[in-house]
Length: 463
Image 1 (tube, rainbow, N blue to C red):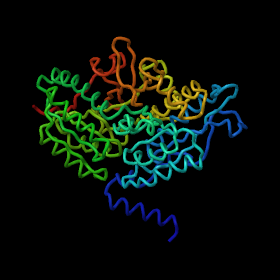
Image 2: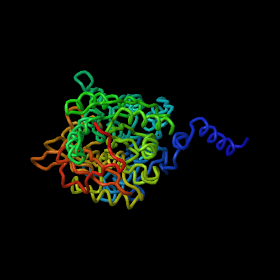
Image 3: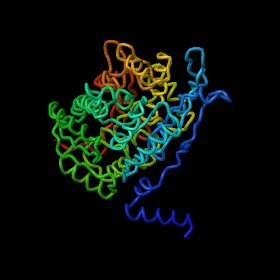
Image 4: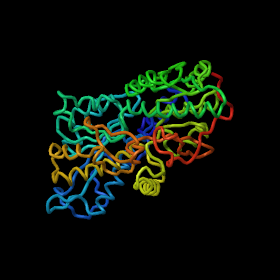
């Protein structure tokens, strides 16, 4: 049997085993075009000596959207920085170079040893001096140790779990001080932003519907990163008048028939709001089955796939009315946001995923840290990265960048100064196009909004 036949057979078996289109998403790698293990120096002049190239390693699931986003954002920033003259240390000019390794962390059957191997190779063979990326908690926890062993600054741009920055306690600081999280905000902060939005949403929907809007369901991936968000939601939602009627933690191998059952259970519980906490392709199944079942509830929560401009077509319009967190839209979070958005969509013909925005900003964070420290030594650079704080933020595409004492992204909107930090936006898919929603100033200023909430045409359950 030749290799081509074997590949076709493997695809057929995968589809049979999983059932339905999700098999294709989970077993067939996407052609993201990321050059694995190859150093590139976009925007830099030709003939640069190797010792004048600052090698930044990009780690992630490079055949999936999260890794692709990290590469695209890093690449665009690298090209901009190099074209503008690179980084000056003393009397010498340096230019950024990028190299990627695939951690396979988006695979449903996770093998953390692959991430460890990728991190080891990117440092020992590709000679990466700094690291950007990461996505799945279980994988990043494993290969984070390799990066800390080698004392390299690691700016995480895809993993939300609190545990990474909790390690920077009194006993763990010296080892884990090399870890910084730029994107997303941590899971606890994400839960807080969601709750802030739900406070607004409760008042808005109650007024619009003329009846109490109180019953909420939670549907989440049965993965570590969703646990803290679930705990936060279950703790805070009742404080603001919500009643959690059902919570479903589903395996990431769930099929369309499973989601049809989940929606029946959610509707039977009397939920008026459904909060998804989903980072992978389950979002497509969730919304297509939502449209088919038409349960009496509104979707509003975390669905990473919904950030892509292709989501409408991928769900055949089933995502209409869905509200989801998005780090950035084409709106003025800072003076850099719209320019970044336009440049990215022009370059790639696609909207930027959250990992793309975070990795783009991470390159500028590295540039500032290196320039201020006048060094390429991670240990020397750390105090200068720590100096990027709420009192001294760096303007980025996603907001004003600042780190907490735990090296987490500083989150919030300061109504007094108008300063927008790493807050996320609530975006609704409406009639073929998603629009930023008003929040009554609950999460971010109303001037960022471009539309009001639309209610499902089939109605909302009674309380």
